[in-house]
Image 1 (cartoon, rainbow over the protein chains, first blue to last red):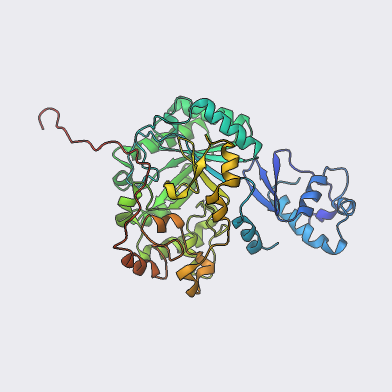
Image 2: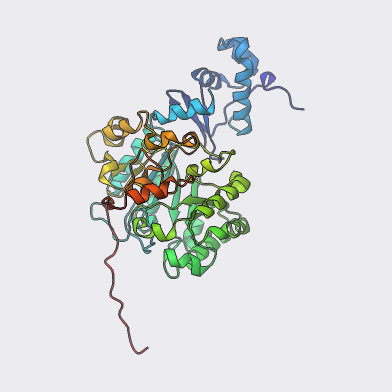
Length: 87
Length: 375
């Protein structure tokens, strides 16, 4: 079983571009042509903070995301990870 | 945020389109009977290379990730490769639709060498008889030849794009097998009564029984087949929604730029009623996208009208605006192909209505057949 995303040091794939939108952002992967909706501005903030320097849990704390919301963030990140947007 | 909330957001419009179609030219070597843009002859007002590049600069600034180029036959433009390279160089991926006539071995190699490029070969039958009846004599062989060139050049996964009609609906499995044979991806889309399709739709559009057949086929195969979300009107047929956002994106997440720079709500409504402006206007494309009255209106909550009495509205969303418009139906009523059968009654009621004609007809003048030599 793979380790929880919360313990991993993730980065945004270099071929992924984020476009701000009223609801959050669109993420587009130029490599696999996948388009994913980031459905909350806080998710966008978190994704932008992921630079491989700390674990996801550390970044969630840094972004001051309430721990009660972490499970929903984990789901959003899992979706991005499955689309190879996060590595 | 749930999928429903996201769709509500998208209906309110985005800062820039997600899916932008740009018909590069009205010129075409073919004369398909269902051509959405009534293409054939080049329009002398066509955007110049410089104008086209300026539009691409703007799309870059708006962070449009990719565009769909079409026509007409886009490869007819002398600056086709120049525009392709410019777009990709600006970080705008391109998917272009072609009948394949201009993809020879050398061009296939050139296309293979490019990144962020998808190619969509149009094919409307898995045999020449079925395909050529719609797309013209010889067009089946042309498409297959182009596919062979792309395969030989090692292009990888190109797309085979099929408009589903009464006559090819039984070939869906064969289309899938053909795509698999070429390592290609199958894309099937809905026939619209737009452009020359206004004249051929009544003969070509799938029957009610065939609509069920398409729905069932998509439920089984839909995950690996592209549809451009075009079959959402079929969702009223069953419990399981088809993959996709299930909404009309016209003017909200989708739009069309035509060869002379006019901006329409979607590729299926080339008519003044749905023209939002022109990229040649002051403020360019951005201004049209953000400020035009038409697009603002489309982003307002839409009335379900006559459909509000039907329990399936949430599933089918009342269907396709273009399909209604070009069959003379009110936009806030059922789709002409409503799977609950409300379309037929509406078509009957509208039979005395003046049906809007496509406004940008570039069809070639009809030719008088001449016999050369002795028969």
